[in-house]
Length: 110
Image 1 (cartoon, rainbow, N blue to C red):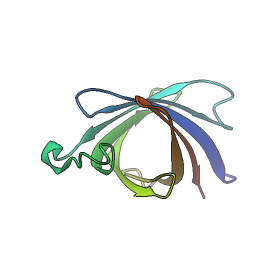
Image 2 (tube, rainbow, N blue to C red):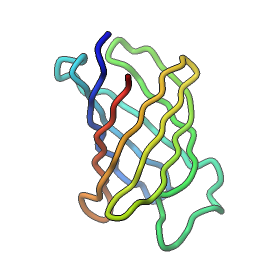
Image 3 (cartoon, rainbow, N blue to C red):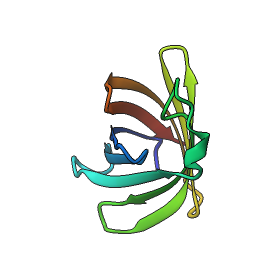
């Protein structure tokens, strides 16, 4: 399989969850879902409310479900994302705020 590139658009929910829709070049335009829930809500940094560690679940277009982790770290102007799943898939991405309640992320997997 060739390198995968895709996008995720997250809504930043008031309960600190990230509710995402994603697609990539292999999905042929089909939109799929992901939910990420902070593992320790008390770690929230008021200056940067989305940086931290999350449990993440994504659903593929064929309805396979995968559980794993998501780590978000700030960098100048945006955020780095690292997803690691129990099926061995690892994705890396860069994200940027669209507004106060959304973030758009480009990701890749080799």
